[in-house]
Image 1 (tube, rainbow, N blue to C red):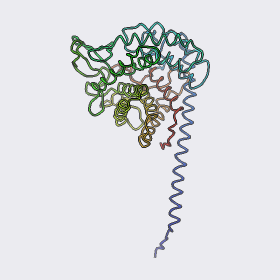
Image 2 (image 1 turned 180 degrees about the vertical axis):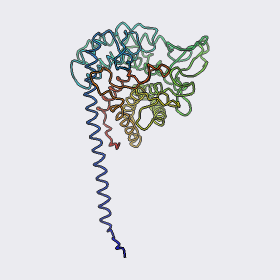
Image 3 (image 1 turned 135 degrees about the horizontal axis):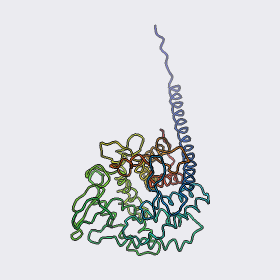
Image 4 (image 1 turned 120 degrees about the vertical axis):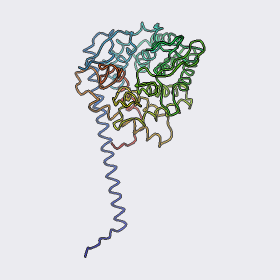
Length: 409
């Protein structure tokens, strides 16, 4: 006859308490391990940047994308990506406090000064917020007045691209010709901060209004009902009416190019930071939720959120995670906070891990497996300088955040 053992209620409670305590210990151990790995990633990232300075040497040469052997392709300052390398050096200075990074960052930053009059580019925000903007925020060893004047001049040039009849800043490129077309790409959302900053620092107040008009109109015309996005919208330059909508770098006109969607999330968070108007935060959350729903388990987005071609793109997740960390600061609802903290911790955990993080610190790039154009084999699974920039920015933002909610991996 089997002997029945009766567990008393106090013992049951104790067992539950023990299980709970073990669970907490496991979570604490995972969290401590994650923090250690973040610190190692910071140290290794700084080592990558040191290697990059030694390898590039010339402050008039700027990385864009890397080759398969992890060497940077270098170009002059006219490329839209030119600001991200000096910007990465500024991020390195913020992470380390090492004056060498400040010195290097200043050299490459000041090499961009002649770009302030480039009326053919819609990407002046990329070039000047990452460089002169970071310098003004971080450095005590610059001519602040002169740096501000560079920023104001760049903003004035960018503002000239604003098209009154469509209430948008026009793009400087398109891969298809349409008669009387004014193309606008989602990427321009990332350049609005230059106008917002300038309007608060001695520039025309009208520039902030241009940024607001562009952001609201972009959401209206680029975002589908389910929160997904188009990459490009073309307008008739006379009537302002939409000619068509589609993509330049995604899989199809009705899919969602992930990097462009990440630009949009980030841009809306910036709009909220400057204006504190709730509509921008709501837009950012809607866009972020669409992005999150389509992430694979490791948090590294596919190059197109809606494509059947499963090709990861670290650049999209690096941009997105930086935006998500900032966005979470503005959310008061604890449940929502916890949801977004878990998401950005998951993404960061993957970015600091193989195969995405490059372990060999003698190489200049930090993060591998970005996608520039999926249609170009040489532009798949390679580092991109903007991936490194937003990854470094996300490390800085993570270090500064107060949302240290315990996460179990």
